[in-house]
Image 1 (cartoon, rainbow, N blue to C red):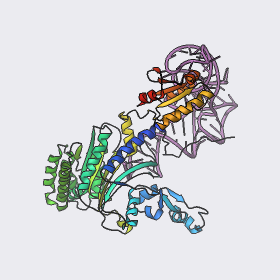
Image 2: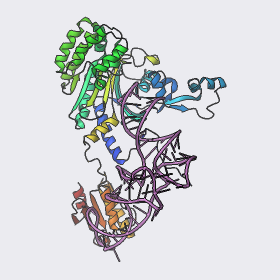
Image 3: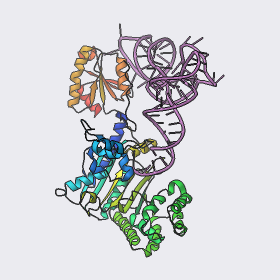
Image 4: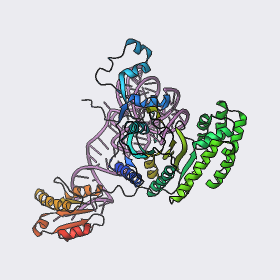
Length: 456
RNA sequence: GUGAUUGUAGCUCAGCUGGUUAGAGCGCUGGUUUGUGGCACCAGAGGUCGCCGGUUCGAACCCGGUCUUUCACCCCA
């Protein structure tokens, strides 16, 4: 008798009709843009072999993977010795599949498996849920959607410029007017490490720099010193950190001088300049785009351009980001595949649009008309009208049971259905249709064709 | 994974230092009005106070555990 209350797992969500309408609006807008730029859609399975997934995201990432217990007697391979050694020794024997953690690794796996059939440069987009056994917080879930687009098999900077254009197109479509696309280049960060006298340590440099927004320069400096950087190196960094954004052209000049002693840093700056030029030729400009030499993200695999998009004046982290990588498929035995990709954070975009109240009347029911009736016989008469309406392409429904007219109207009201037809004995006798506008309360007696004209 | 935090009606929340039958607003159902929704008025339904255990004559309130929520760290979308 004690039936427990239903619930859903931690960090997961249901999407009701209103949320689905809004999510679909977001996804359709994004897909539309991807297709316009020549990307093709790909889907991969929710589960991958654990060997495909492990080792790709670092030790912490491996811990965040959801593993799937083997079917049947999942303990049959486990020995007492395995058990004594603990979870990590047992894992490969009880689980050989896991849920995908992102879309990039499955994509790399797909490219390698299909390298002979694919047309390169291969431009694909992929919108699917991914799973992480993280501890949920606001805007962080255990099941969430990623929405990736990548171009692999070319190192043309045209791709970078196009990505910037796609981001701008999508955000414009959403009605967002106050956002910033931050761009940088990994090579500039590498050059930076050389220039301040810590060549090869850009990884550590970036991890610290990345926190600049959050914890401020003093704390970052502290962390750098803790990581074994000299005070001299930190001092050299200070003027760059203190620099206020003063336009991309000025930042470029500043950094090309700074990078003069670093070959790779100079290359990074010139790549960035070329992206700006290509963007211009493609009909875009650098409004909304900010060259931020301190931007660092996903360092483990980005090798060229880096992007990150933030919507200003909302309490939500980055809503989109990406970059170029030189070796996507190397771990699967296919070296030298360069690519560039980026991703929209659908859940966060949802929250942003919600917070800024930028969803248009998506709450509106797609149903345009409901037939109300006064009894069994009237309902059957109404069914014939309903069929004619649907044949004419009008999204419509009939109140399917006997109820007070008041209740029928209340139903239409709650579903925001704008029009109603009322069927009673009078209408059946005259053959005319009583057509009511539920917003204005205005009611008229019409022929069927006139009804269609009203709904046109 | 570490440290905090939250949970009372469908929703948002009251509920005093432990003390009878746990409240409000909104929503819901019905009626005023057996062919006309939104407004108004009237009536009604709905809660094992997250769950399990403990302390007590007595627990929504105190204690322990567990799940959930939110937050910081870690990491990230």
